[in-house]
Length: 421
Image 1: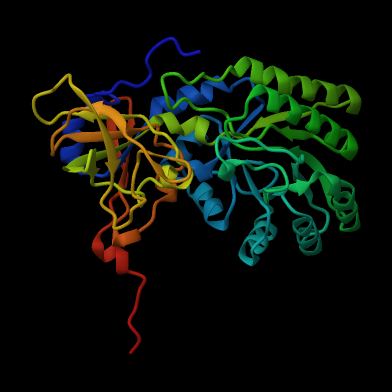
Image 2 (image 1 turned 45 degrees about the horizontal axis):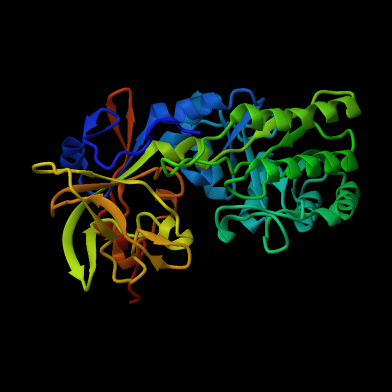
């Protein structure tokens, strides 16, 4: 369990750079990422043979480049993510296995791309096997299996069981193997991921399911993937991941399969949020403070167009205040909301849309509010709702500040639009 306070109610800097300077140079709202935090999380997982970053968590090409330089490979769930990986310097062909296309469907452009570029594929449906086998017989694939149960901090992040669309239903495995054989496709790996925030009780069930499924497929299995869902602390009371215990459970599965198959089996892990969440900060400015009945609101210049996790999942993010003027040691309960013309534009809400207050330092208009642990599923889920420009992204690496995405302009918003003549 954490023994130190991870999150403080006030802060003066991000990655050693004064917040006042960051706000002056880049404005608000802006995303900032600490490169060393990402490297530290990568280092925690070095026991695994392969660390494959689920880039949907944060797909800026500068972040992908950092991952590549740390020997982390990636998955891609779209042709756009494949393109990003290539821009960041990854090799696409299956021989290098640096990029794996993993999804539940092929759209037509994705199927054409994986065939043309010989990209490794992790199939999440029987139709994917059939379509790839028809277009490119003789390929090797991995299968994402839904073991029939799931787990997650929200129903919307649960990726297992019959209420999830993800993966091949475990009882259809024999049918899928028959489809693969009919199209001269070899199943060389298995992947299981049942949701985020996995605890060890559920993890043991996944390990047992992986062992059973791999033995059902047979000795063609060369790789197993533990998926992702590694927990990230968002509160001072949260328990940090016991990485050694996590690895030992999966390593036990791997060793059992090696003894049965008579050859080595590669053990992959596929973290997304775990690698990048704690690195990220969404810097905002408090632009209004007002009372509505007995409730007090801090209204900031970022909305769910910038960070959608609270409105989607009721996700909790730690928050801190950076005082522009004289600091105070007093606290008050405040609801934190954004500028959008939408009642759901509240950062302090629970799942189901229940608005709640947060104990925060007494603040003034012009102070900065920092939404922390915002490096995963933050910018990547941003939108232009209310015609708000996308925020800038900034990477701070060893004291050096790098702009890795400029803020959109109003002209950018309409650049792809046209009025019929």
